[in-house]
Image 1 (cartoon, rainbow, N blue to C red):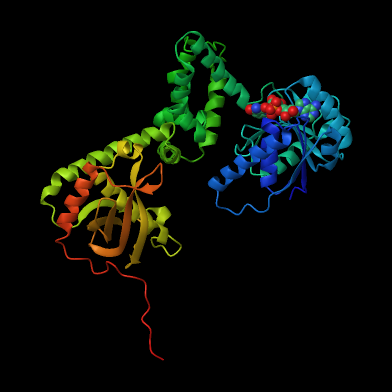
Image 2 (image 1 turned 60 degrees about the horizontal axis):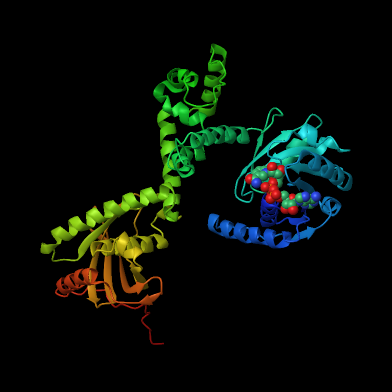
Length: 497
Ligand SMILES: NC(=O)c1ccc[n+]([C@@H]2O[C@H](COP(=O)([O-])OP(=O)(O)OC[C@H]3O[C@@H](n4cnc5c(N)ncnc54)[C@H](O)[C@@H]3O)[C@@H](O)[C@H]2O)c1
């Protein structure tokens, strides 16, 4: 419990509005001071985006939203606050003056944090009567999503204030990082600025364009930085010999002109020992192989997450998969002339996340597998990225799943597909799902697929190349026995009473 009900905010620009959204989403009432007549609108718009992001990020119940009230004086926001956060323009004189006014208006037990990107807390607290309650709480944009907040105290800040600030930031879903020494730019901005300086030189020297520099990060090291930072990734790069080996291999390069940042600490024995000891502590009991697996799993999560957005490194993965699927589908089409039974187009394995509390594949996973089976059929009949990009696709308009047997995690599965009927706009499908090791039938799904113009959301005939494939398969499948459960409805035999 932080005892914080109302959060006071000074400044409602990019960062202040982000704080307002984070606080309100966490149920705090917010009183925010900004002189901009457009402040209400701007903060409201940030709030809409923040709620949208949270609804995508988590299914956990968020609770009731706090209120947001915009006021025009520093004193009004400070007097109402149980925790106060300043996000005014990055001007030292202005911040010192307004923080002084806020300090006089706020209750003496209220912690005052500043979002400053790099001004020193000792200076910012210099106009305060109660400087001991002042900390820098440096957030990152967008504040409502980015967990990191760097806490840095000034000469007069109390340890208790840093502790209470950390407790509050944690309570609104953040990850406080205590900066051990008061230093310009704190930790993260110093790291970002080193990269930024080098990037500016690369543009200046026509080595790379802005877009190429961003590509070098987002398709490369940026993906790893997201979850392991720099030291742990370099430890893994050292292989079984670890950090000392990495430093021996790449340490000398620091003296070569790879960057314009030529000022580098002497890699003497003492510094090497310090880095190696800190790296050992960081890695704990994890072997290099353990760390490699963790790194790979995290990379897969990031890449899969981005694949859903079809953006940055995710679009590379998507294009790669598309190629694999298309190659697979055309190989199957070529081998299909002799096929006389239902098509066997999709295989899968019961993934850990598909399993429910009973240890069995959960309901939604059946729909996933049958959806993937339909996708396999679509690839098979010639629907590729270009076809979809032209605004044409099949949509599922009806599904009836029958669950016949339970299936456990890790089991290999395969699915078959029979076209029961088709015309230029529709495919009536019957899928069967099997446990591969013993051909046990697990479930069936009957579906109606409608060919649509996706831009206009209306049914339309499939293109000739796709339709030819559909009709060719339908003609073959017409001769197959109709599946026993096709056309079945849910019904309960009535018993006469
Ligand atoms: N933008 C970022 O990415 C970022 C990241 C971390 C920290 N910060 C820090 O956060 C602080 C705010 O930055 P920002 O990007 O939100 O700036 P901003 O210009 O978007 O917002 C500043 C707000 O302060 C208001 N303001 C100015 N004078 C005022 C006054 N006298 N009384 C009340 N309101 C007043 C302005 O109307 C504006 O809405 C700065 O210290 C900055 O260094 C910024």
